[in-house]
Amino acid sequence: VLASELQFQGERFSIHLFRATLADAQLTNLSGEDMETNDGLPVYSPDGEWIAFSRKKPNAPMGKQLWLMPADGREATAVTHNADLHYSQPAWSPDSSQIVVQGYDLAEPGAEPALWLVDIATSHMQEVVSPGIEPQWLP
Image (cartoon, rainbow, N blue to C red; front, side):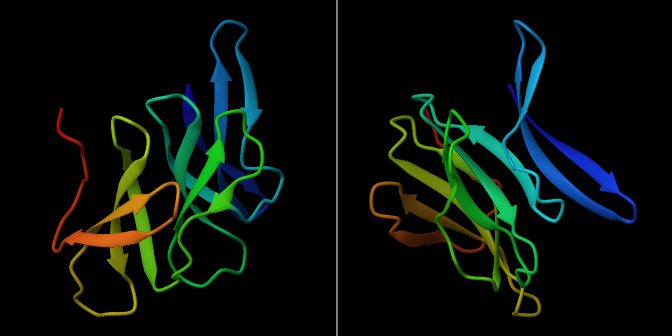
Protein backbone atom coordinates (compact mmCIF):
# COMPACT_ATOMS: atom_id res chain seq x y z
CA VAL A 1 0.00 0.00 0.00
CA LEU A 2 1.28 3.52 -0.83
CA ALA A 3 0.40 6.62 1.19
CA SER A 4 1.43 10.26 1.56
CA GLU A 5 2.04 11.79 4.98
CA LEU A 6 2.42 15.42 6.04
CA GLN A 7 5.39 15.76 8.39
CA PHE A 8 6.31 18.76 10.54
CA GLN A 9 9.71 19.82 11.84
CA GLY A 10 9.25 23.07 13.74
CA GLU A 11 7.57 25.48 11.31
CA ARG A 12 8.73 23.54 8.24
CA PHE A 13 6.80 20.72 6.67
CA SER A 14 7.18 18.10 4.00
CA ILE A 15 4.98 15.51 2.35
CA HIS A 16 6.62 12.10 2.07
CA LEU A 17 5.63 8.86 0.40
CA PHE A 18 5.45 5.70 2.48
CA ARG A 19 5.03 2.08 1.55
CA ALA A 20 3.11 0.10 4.16
CA THR A 21 3.52 -3.65 4.36
CA LEU A 22 0.25 -4.94 5.74
CA ALA A 23 1.59 -8.34 6.82
CA ASP A 24 3.95 -6.83 9.42
CA ALA A 25 2.70 -3.20 9.60
CA GLN A 26 6.13 -1.93 8.50
CA LEU A 27 6.42 1.60 7.04
CA THR A 28 9.18 2.51 4.58
CA ASN A 29 9.86 6.18 3.79
CA LEU A 30 10.29 6.28 0.00
CA SER A 31 10.97 10.04 -0.08
CA GLY A 32 14.18 9.98 1.92
CA GLU A 33 15.14 12.21 4.81
CA ASP A 34 15.01 15.63 3.10
CA MET A 35 12.46 17.63 5.09
CA GLU A 36 11.75 19.96 2.16
CA THR A 37 10.75 17.33 -0.41
CA ASN A 38 7.04 17.27 -1.20
CA ASP A 39 5.77 14.09 -2.85
CA GLY A 40 2.23 13.08 -3.63
CA LEU A 41 -0.26 11.02 -5.60
CA PRO A 42 1.74 7.78 -5.79
CA VAL A 43 0.45 5.11 -8.19
CA TYR A 44 1.87 1.62 -8.82
CA SER A 45 2.20 0.55 -12.44
CA PRO A 46 -0.13 -2.33 -13.39
CA ASP A 47 2.87 -4.67 -13.73
CA GLY A 48 3.99 -3.71 -10.20
CA GLU A 49 7.46 -2.64 -11.35
CA TRP A 50 7.19 1.17 -10.95
CA ILE A 51 5.71 3.94 -8.84
CA ALA A 52 4.71 7.20 -10.56
CA PHE A 53 4.26 10.28 -8.36
CA SER A 54 4.52 14.06 -8.33
CA ARG A 55 7.45 15.74 -6.54
CA LYS A 56 8.64 19.24 -5.68
CA LYS A 57 12.29 19.24 -4.65
CA PRO A 58 13.71 21.76 -2.15
CA ASN A 59 14.31 25.20 -3.65
CA ALA A 60 12.74 24.12 -6.96
CA PRO A 61 10.69 26.88 -8.53
CA MET A 62 6.94 26.53 -8.76
CA GLY A 63 5.18 23.28 -9.72
CA LYS A 64 5.59 19.60 -8.99
CA GLN A 65 7.15 17.35 -11.61
CA LEU A 66 6.37 13.77 -12.65
CA TRP A 67 8.81 11.24 -11.14
CA LEU A 68 9.29 7.48 -11.38
CA MET A 69 10.94 5.06 -8.99
CA PRO A 70 11.28 1.29 -9.03
CA ALA A 71 8.66 -0.35 -6.79
CA ASP A 72 11.37 -1.31 -4.29
CA GLY A 73 11.98 2.40 -3.58
CA ARG A 74 15.45 2.71 -5.12
CA GLU A 75 16.55 5.93 -6.82
CA ALA A 76 13.71 8.06 -8.12
CA THR A 77 14.13 9.78 -11.50
CA ALA A 78 12.47 12.95 -12.79
CA VAL A 79 10.49 12.45 -16.00
CA THR A 80 9.48 16.09 -16.48
CA HIS A 81 11.66 19.17 -16.02
CA ASN A 82 9.44 22.17 -16.76
CA ALA A 83 9.20 24.24 -13.58
CA ASP A 84 6.41 26.38 -15.07
CA LEU A 85 4.12 23.34 -15.24
CA HIS A 86 2.59 21.53 -12.28
CA TYR A 87 2.08 17.83 -13.05
CA SER A 88 -0.30 15.67 -11.05
CA GLN A 89 -2.67 12.71 -11.11
CA PRO A 90 -0.60 10.18 -13.08
CA ALA A 91 -2.57 7.28 -14.55
CA TRP A 92 -0.82 4.21 -16.01
CA SER A 93 -1.71 2.49 -19.27
CA PRO A 94 -2.80 -1.14 -18.75
CA ASP A 95 0.52 -2.41 -20.19
CA SER A 96 2.64 -0.06 -17.97
CA SER A 97 4.30 1.51 -21.03
CA GLN A 98 2.70 4.97 -20.79
CA ILE A 99 1.34 7.44 -18.28
CA VAL A 100 -1.25 10.11 -18.86
CA VAL A 101 -0.80 13.04 -16.49
CA GLN A 102 -2.51 16.36 -15.86
CA GLY A 103 -0.35 19.43 -16.44
CA TYR A 104 -1.20 22.97 -15.40
CA ASP A 105 0.80 26.00 -16.60
CA LEU A 106 1.48 28.05 -13.47
CA ALA A 107 3.20 30.86 -15.39
CA GLU A 108 0.15 31.66 -17.54
CA PRO A 109 -2.71 33.46 -15.77
CA GLY A 110 -6.03 31.78 -16.51
CA ALA A 111 -4.43 28.73 -18.12
CA GLU A 112 -6.52 25.59 -18.50
CA PRO A 113 -5.12 22.23 -17.36
CA ALA A 114 -4.11 19.81 -20.12
CA LEU A 115 -3.51 16.08 -20.34
CA TRP A 116 -0.11 14.82 -21.45
CA LEU A 117 0.88 11.34 -22.61
CA VAL A 118 4.32 10.15 -21.47
CA ASP A 119 6.13 7.21 -23.06
CA ILE A 120 8.04 5.48 -20.23
CA ALA A 121 10.82 4.03 -22.42
CA THR A 122 11.71 7.34 -24.10
CA SER A 123 10.27 9.99 -21.73
CA HIS A 124 8.70 11.57 -24.83
CA MET A 125 5.73 13.77 -23.89
CA GLN A 126 2.80 14.74 -26.08
CA GLU A 127 -0.13 16.97 -25.15
CA VAL A 128 -3.30 15.02 -25.96
CA VAL A 129 -6.13 17.34 -24.88
CA SER A 130 -6.60 20.84 -23.50
CA PRO A 131 -8.49 21.59 -21.40
CA GLY A 132 -8.44 18.26 -19.64
CA ILE A 133 -8.53 17.04 -16.05
CA GLU A 134 -8.44 13.84 -14.01
CA PRO A 135 -6.81 11.44 -16.52
CA GLN A 136 -7.96 7.82 -16.65
CA TRP A 137 -7.47 4.87 -19.03
CA LEU A 138 -10.57 3.22 -20.40
CA PRO A 139 -10.77 -0.57 -20.13
